[in-house]
Image (spheres, rainbow, N blue to C red):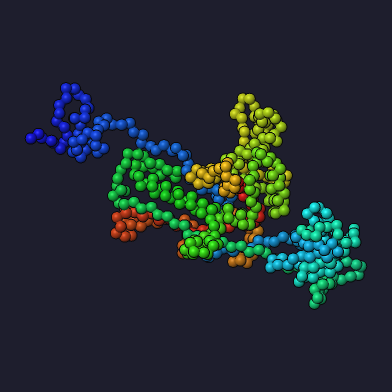
Length: 485
């Protein structure tokens, strides 16, 4: 009977060379083609360091550029925003016989006094200035006397806008008070405000590695964006878990949605409340510009955005955070206005481009009208693993409204703080996180288990726990613009 030794083949060879019959078996197997054998006798050339083929993979940083973080100690943050100062109404009805009717509602009340002078404009541009001779607060009916006509017949019957620009009273008159009929006096306008709120959500994550794997040495030297390096693989896994969690802290308050549907199968029915993120706040209370193409539409549509900003807070300095396509569209739009060279656009870069230097074909900022804009790419909108992976199919008639960018006002806003009982200044965009003297939940990290220095249980592993509780406050959302497809 032939001997089949465990250490491998005993077939001799006339030359010193590697053959299928004379190598050692890792597990004592006799088949040279087995995957568990040392079939390759030479040590391979090993690159110990990982190749960073995706560059810096972290996405956070947007909120650090435009906002701030502040502690709070409640389950809800509430702030109040001022309403407009001047009195105006839209969609007023006109009987063309000197009667204008404001339609009262829960949010619309007639506060125009007798003696007020108003401007009435319809959608075709017809205009008429009148003085109010009678005003009914309950029904919203105004009786007016035009200055340049005998009736209001020159105005359309619907869709009339009116606003108060002053008042006129006779000599020796006094400001009248309203009588019980509410048709012949002066109303004292009480200031009102609009209240908004948001609730923080708890964000958690965990990384687990067994005690045995912590002692396993690898041959690949790992390195991550935060500087962690070594030949222990769990160092990389723990570090990447932390980096991913830090990105979630920002992504959660950018993409967050409140649980507004209560039907079966909804998040609310499952016990989740959600939080209002940046995109949701702008869609609800701000300005959404759909289908904006800076290169194709040139300045026409962009100027329409500026006109809308004029009707809002008119914040002078603004930041544009854009995806790559929209950013290049802005560059092309601005290049088309550059008169240095109509053919090649070689005057990019504010008068300093020459034939001996690299041509600068981009713009980092510009001024239009009374507004300054500072443009930058938002990595979150370009990354293929997040918003950058959303593509628009040309054949789809109504594509999904992907996010192309956002216009964020710079500076601060004045709001009334319910807790402090006074007006305070806050950045338009800022994060509130739960914290008190007993516990700070801005970014908590702790170890559990019995490995890696933790001695909290008999689990033969190290558990790295991450937790945060936070929400985003978007104040003055009427000054923000969301660019969508």
